[in-house]
Length: 130
Image 1 (spheres, helix red, strand yellow):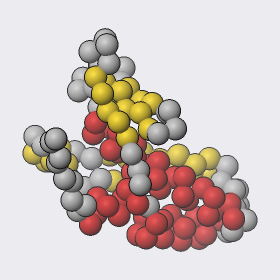
Image 2 (cartoon, rainbow, N blue to C red):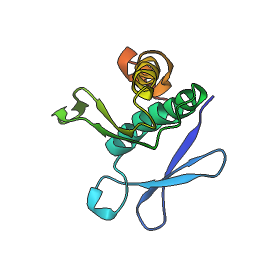
Image 3 (cartoon, rainbow, N blue to C red):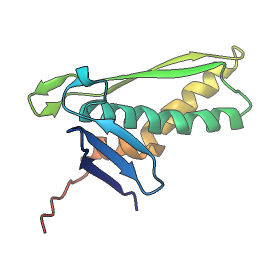
Image 4 (cartoon, rainbow, N blue to C red):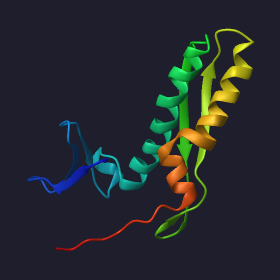
């Protein structure tokens, strides 16, 4: 089970902490030097894809020279995002790595990335107020 606690901090900001003690600051104003919740969602999509693509590509003998991505989405309503677009920025170690990378990235997107798959399938979000 994944578990994250989000709480207001003494300085009026917000912090998300996982069970291992890692934390990230967030807020509603991007000018505060923190991630907004939407940016964290996009980071989760990118992070899920990239941490899965990296080892699978290397396992097939092609350690990528550069592996980065941009994840973007526009708000189509005040409370809803339109399609999320993942754009890779890679430098291949050799021309023959292109086919391997494309196959792995496609499989990760279509089948393995829990975050992307959950968004695509419309995972239910439940509210519990004790």
